[in-house]
Length: 152
Image (cartoon, rainbow, N blue to C red):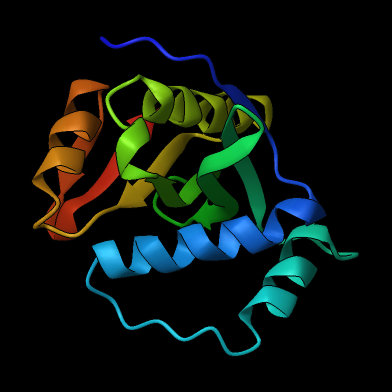
């Protein structure tokens, strides 16, 4: 695996401009419709407001945010327990294959463990074969709709 120095840290309000750029790139990569209208203010409230439903960690290289992972906590009826839901994971193209994505996943997984979550769940489009291979390699279990569960 290639080597690079990077930092994983909590997202802070000054990251929002770059985060919005990465979110737009992520939506484009996943072939999804995306509009910028009012999203930055809503995201700011979700991440840094009084009641925070969304959590975000970022990856930084040389002082620049190059990737992010967002997650929430939800309750599973079938498991009768809480789980951590990885909403988004994205890295700039030039920073893939350095192990950063795996560290972002491990970080969210550890947060789930500390919150006594039963597992971690996420999904990816079925055409994202590279991500699917990565998720399976780290222990993810594919289900219909290519949604993954990772036991914690």
